[in-house]
Image (cartoon, rainbow, N blue to C red; front, side, top):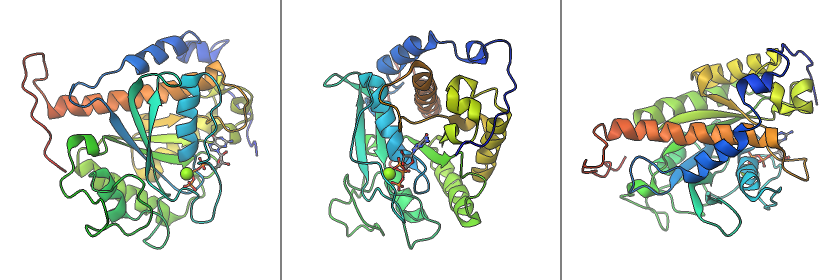
Length: 295
Ligand SMILES: Nc1nc2c(ncn2[C@@H]2O[C@H](COP(=O)(O)OP(=O)(O)OP(=O)(O)O)[C@@H](O)[C@H]2O)c(=O)[nH]1
Ligand SMILES: [Mg+2]
């Protein structure tokens, strides 16, 4: 469903003024060579949280697709009442098929529910963030009786960044209960000093011009309003919203879709580094890095 055609162009080619085409290779190099400030942290675990159908699993597939330079197929995308993804699963993002892992590891999760009946509730989500929950874990609620429960997770097992994944086509109609659940999560996770960003997916469904070419992303008035709604829903700054279009209908990857996705990944990695800088204020070659306290 494509709803809007308002495009307020900035110059002849808005994408050139915001994200030049040549940015793809630079962004790619930046992501592949990224190393966290804390050299003891080779992998940055990013947890995808959001309602069913928002595009969490599709983002995993999209991230892999960029790196492999072709659309990747994984049997993790689908629609189901109460959420399609049933397990907590981490996915390494390699620089190329069979190549070295990048610093990014995406942790796909069950949908966030608006209570404890379906999907992840607040306490489950916090247990995942703190690293207590074993890989492949399936059902809720999570307790210390669960097989593989990690009582004292290391820094590597904790989550280092939260991505709230929201669909641009639904952000204006999510139930109030979901908004409350996300805002509560935002407050609790902030208290744990874990950086958070919002990934706004399905942007191709709210603006005709963006549907035609995502280069119009920052010049579409409708999209700008949708970005503001997403920020308001979680009560986070507008600058924390990263619009992307997942690879869902294409048979091959394209430069502009890659640029938006890579730009989002760059923001994620930078947000984690910014957090680590605060955790290790004297970070330099001679600074002795103390492990973070378990959350
Ligand atoms: N048009 C469009 N469709 C998308 C986008 N991202 C995901 N989809 C579609 O949305 C549907 C749900 O995507 P998933 O990635 O499975 O969503 P999810 O958030 O993992 O959902 P659950 O596992 O149920 O929590 C699929 O049909 C995808 O193809 C996007 O950016 N644009
Ligand atoms: Mg899923």
